[in-house]
Length: 275
Image (tube, rainbow, N blue to C red; front, side, top):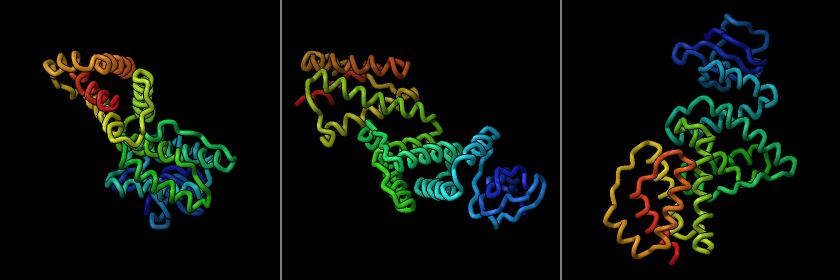
């Protein structure tokens, strides 16, 4: 038996748990007539998850004002699937952020609206495992709701998963994806070419940019390529100068210094693409 701490609605309540402190219990009629301090049988709940922070509890309560119980149940199934695939317990905020996002995404689908995702290829390359799990989740949701959810949503869900896994804000994760897309556009314009998004050299470039951003943010970039830098500057001046242009864009966006050694790696990637 668990002690009721707060009733969120007739079907959802917050209870005190001996192992997890506070948990959210979901079950038909579970919260009906219950008051704080009363006991409730944990096994009566169809679903339960941990929601520790008061701020998160309040946001979840607001969510329940417009999201129906059936969809809440589907979302809890989905979040359990993510935790199983990655063998982790996700940050509790995903219960709010992902539920809210998909609720409105499905509302748009039913209205015949399709929100395009311009960063879909870059998201798949940057976060392949998250993208694979997101694909599985969208297929599951499409099947349960009997409607076709556009593929662009896979990318958005992948970013939500990555945000929850890394405990980085969705805003920051989005900014990095958009930065890579912007760099690719600058490359295409500067080299006057249309890059094949399935070309192996493009895949290598995007993965490289992703790792560079991660390393710079973590302060783990210590390479020194002074000798090779001078050689490449003489051999491939166009690609070398473009690499510096890209580095300046990265520096302005990330608000961090990009090591000069990065000019070497970018020049090599650009030279392969320009061929």
